[in-house]
Amino acid sequence: AEVHRGAVRRRGRHDDARSASEGFSRFTQAFGPDLSQIRKELGELTHRSTRQVLARQRLNTYLSFALFFVACGIGLAVSAVASKQVVSGLRQLVARTKAIEAGADTEPLSIRSRDEVGELALSFDRMIEELRSRDRVRETFGKFVDPRLVSRLIASGDNQAERRNLTIFFSDIKQFTGISEQLTAGAVVHLLNNYFGAVANVIHEHHGIIDKYIGDAVMAFWVPPFSVGDDHAGDACRAALAQQAAIATLRERVPEITGMRRNPPNLIIRMGIATGEAVVGTIGSDSARSYTVIGDSVNLAARLEGMNKAYGTEIIISEETYRLAQSAIEARELDTIIVAGKTEPVRIYELMACAGGLDAAHDRLRDLFAEGLAAYRSQELELAEDRFMNCLEAVADDGPALLFLQRITLLRQSPPPAGWDGIWRHTEK
Image (tube, rainbow, N blue to C red; front, top):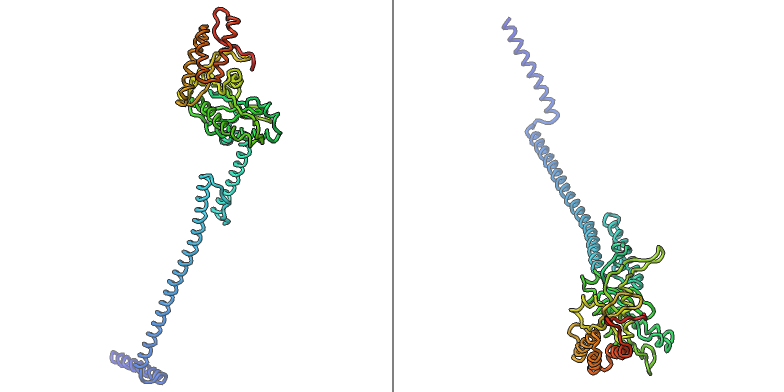
């Protein structure tokens, strides 16, 4: 049995070999007898295919990198353009902001984009228009009310009145009624405009605020914070002296202004200054208000302006004004009086010059007048008369000296009662 199984096994392998041989025969018939050439061609074909695939992969890789760099370039270019537009818009905004801060007028921005910068530019243009509107209000309203007050009222919105210590100023043109009767209406207006222009500039330069024009009169006041601390009295006195200098210059132009080449009117300005408490703020009704000052000091300043007529002076100041401003001015005590409508006496002074500005004649006049005034109050009329006469020798037309010589004549005719205090009561405003 074992031999039989071995024979069968050998016979089976032979069959397999035959089958394989027949297969190779068919393969040889199909492809030829040279198998090595086939293998070589298959290898070359495979190698070529592999290289082609690798070449395509490299090409795809290069194309991918190229497209990537192109996309990056386009993106960077677009970003650069967009950034440039944004930066340009922001630079315009910064430039316009600095221009506005410097007070220069600016044109609307040319930014028309619809992004956040465009919205910011639109808001900025609206702000500029609002500022221009406020400037127009300030410019127009500032012709009627001092521009500094307009700015303060717009900024704070404060329309409340308050009690402050300040200095009041009144001025008036001497014999203006007679002057106006000599001129045409146009000439009167022209003269007043030139006069108000000259004094207004001086008042503003010395930190004063013009309250109002009353005919040919000017009312102004000095108050913190426009004048620092108690400098309001000194500022008012310096402004009054500077106005007199400006009027002297204007007086030379009166013939040209009025058209009167012969006998032109003589422009003389009288001024009164008083310092004290007053109510300052917006005062009036719901339909009409004005920023002004009211109080006893206002009335006193108006009365002192009128006192110049009696004393033959140009600037009279109150005792409180002198007390605060004495280091900045030269003045002489004139009198102690009770003004019309008042019961309390007031010591008054003539403002003569800024500190150190007196010439020798007026310096001597001040000393002689002080001696005469002291003698007058002690009823030493002979000594007082002698000193006042000496005043006229120093300055021939000194008004106060002439006035006190008249008073001495009256006192001799009607001696004062016992206990006379030397206070003179004025019954006229």
